[in-house]
Image: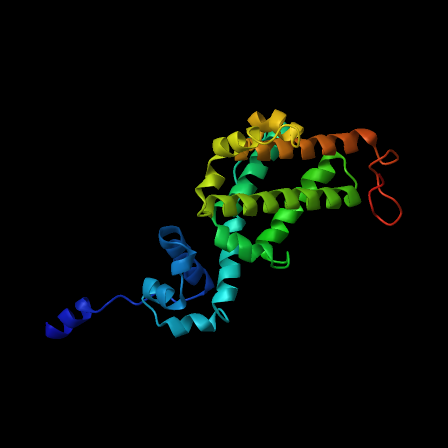
Length: 239
């Protein structure tokens, strides 16, 4: 009986440690406590494992963070295929931007990595397919994909910086508009006239930029390969 009781009281065998389990634990910590609290020791505690075991799967914290960022930024959103293509693209563009906006520390890390991680490669393939299916040439699709990436990444990182900043003025567009309205009209006539419209809602400004990009795609498709906006022999779009 004593031996049987000892067996019953024994802890169940732990699941084998692998990269996915480690990333699962790291993601849970980031969602609960933020990237700043993520350490190898903290991950080890989360897994009930020796932190040094993590180094058999990742060379260090930087590599782990890049892989975690790639995993989080590779999430996709379900879009109703019955929607017009523009609305589908706008939904996907908003989702892409919010990935950067919601995880600023990981976003900054991923933004300076080569675009050769699995999730970024899948995103590139999906976007290039969408653009070529709309009627763009490979060269046009590649250039437009870069424009889209600049829009998504640049806006997402900028918004993340603004929202994380300590200066409350950055989160008070009304105060900024009033400040511009009070500028000397003889020196800043255009800024004073436009003051009531400056510093619009961040999401509205982003959607406006997305619409400009989608308008450009439609113009390129309408113009066709031999019209302005097609590519020269070296693959560069002509003016």
